[in-house]
Length: 358
Image 1 (cartoon, rainbow, N blue to C red):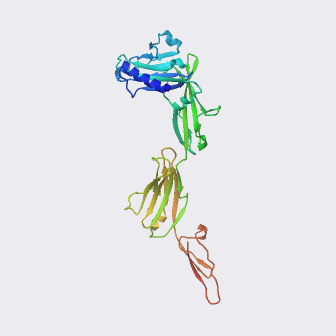
Image 2 (image 1 turned 90 degrees about the horizontal axis):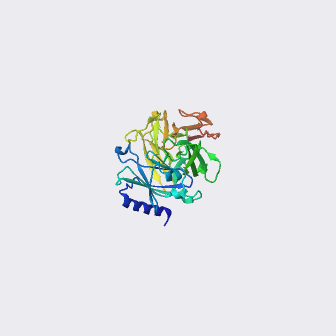
Image 3 (image 1 turned 30 degrees about the vertical axis):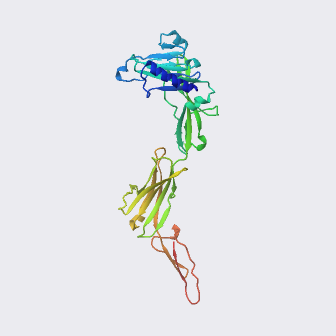
């Protein structure tokens, strides 16, 4: 039977012997030797607000009531502040089960404490806190703010270390990349009566690709025929169900109602590797007015800054070449690069004529 299984069995026995324990309030803590431990007795009602809980250490050999006047508590580096029981430096001797009550034995809260050696891999696995960031975005690692000591124990900052590296880090990435995925350790430092005490947590960082617009490209021009039906797809790689893409026309939202002459609709396709969102901009019948506007596909995400791509529509042209001379249709010029020149062949009998649609 593992250490954790043993503690759970003891917790069950303790519950049966001493009264009802709310499973919602039960806690099992995993700490390293030498670190500070804080157990906080929760309130059940406002009546408990001004009361001081009674703490009990349930070892396999004896049951000890803990209070600040206890000599054994001082020798074991155990303090009681308000609702909190604080173990300044945990040792193997502190391992076991604890309970607190506000005087009514039927309302008892139980805690299990497992103390590991510094080299224990099991401790790291039990205390891993997952965190996710996205490439090319800023990222700040958060050291878990759980079991915080009472106010008379002063916070002295947080130190970060990456697994396998000794140099400290500040836990901030200006532009994170996938190579930053790793396990990080944060150490919360506290001062009490001139001594420094630590609490250590492990954060497992997973860096995922950012959501991005795959197509169309910025400032891309789409050539269209007046009166035709045109569909322009905005394809987006997304990594969250909260990511969304939509179309704007000169800064105003395009409708999703297909009864409008210009509207858009969205579809999502998800497989085992990736998820893509397509926002399709639909022109039921291209008009001159449509050619005068800019259209923007905008990506909004819950975990990164918004991004967008703006496109334009241009009218397709017909180029007529007669005898080497080029006749340009309205709205086209050589400077726009929208004309393909066809050199007309001359003969003694006639001039050749060619048409080109570009």
